[in-house]
Length: 414
Image 1 (cartoon, rainbow, N blue to C red):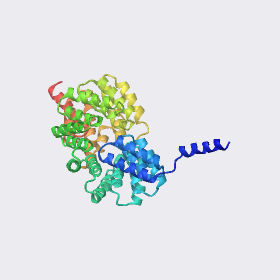
Image 2 (cartoon, rainbow, N blue to C red):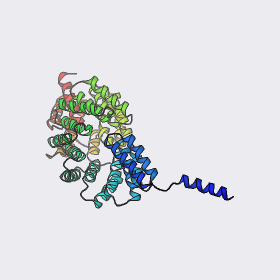
Image 3 (tube, rainbow, N blue to C red):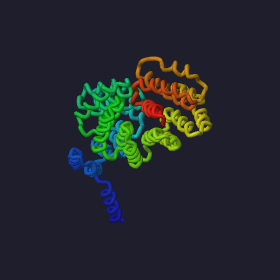
Image 4 (cartoon, rainbow, N blue to C red):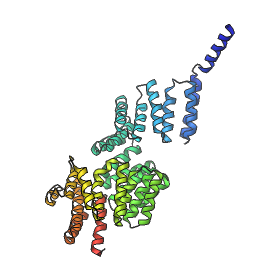
């Protein structure tokens, strides 16, 4: 009996060895060297060894989370950062890095909570400010994003994320020159940043510089060949330059790389519209909304257009009526105009003003008013409205690009 108890005790002791802080630190240091050398897989092996040697060693949990983040394993990264926070709750970097991982999987509110905690612990955490800027951008708080990103840059001038986010926010406010400047600064810090290249491509597209946009998107693909976003943006630049086959190829590449990437279907829907392939256009728009419901207020009007011009006006009307019921705002106003419950005069009253938002609304209003006139056979007024849409210079908008195509077709008699 005594011998069996001794054996049992030995078994328990072997299966639960005492922590070895020295071995943990040695493995952790080896992991950090592998991370510095660009080997996250090797780093994970070493950090896991450190955790096995001492499960209470928080830096190993944190750095393993960082290595998993580098591999795109965001949920696993969150789990490791959470354990690091449990062990050492008041470390700003731990909360910041968990926030970054949450941001990647669109847990925006959770990310904001982590960034707030990180900044409460260390107000000078530039990375946390950049992360919070990114989350504010996701919530369409562009002024707040610019403010946080600017603070981050003041603390750490080489903060790539802060430049990219500030540039993207400026892009959405119509400040394309400022956006290009910020993305260029980000690229000065990291010349191979696909994120900065894609955003600069978008800003250059917004200025109508399609050659430069195409160049940046191609560089982004060279930097990150598996980026569906980069392929989609290059496709859009190719489309603007009249390269239909190249654009379609890029959109299909984006879909293969990420079958759930709604933007690729959205972009291809407009390519089909340019070719007057109305059924295909409507199908792509609906697929885009299925994958990314936030696109519906943007695309519902284009679905109406595609169905109406394919001879399915009744179906277009039903779909529009179903969507607009109980809704307010600009998209709803535009939908009511298309549905016939708002006059053209009332629609145009909603676009008075000179800021960027007014210009975008003006472009949408004149484009869809032109389409209604075309459907009614009034080509002269349609041409005048399409000309006004283009005069807004809102080149980033699909309605601006579509106005250009429709006006060319109208003037050529196609």
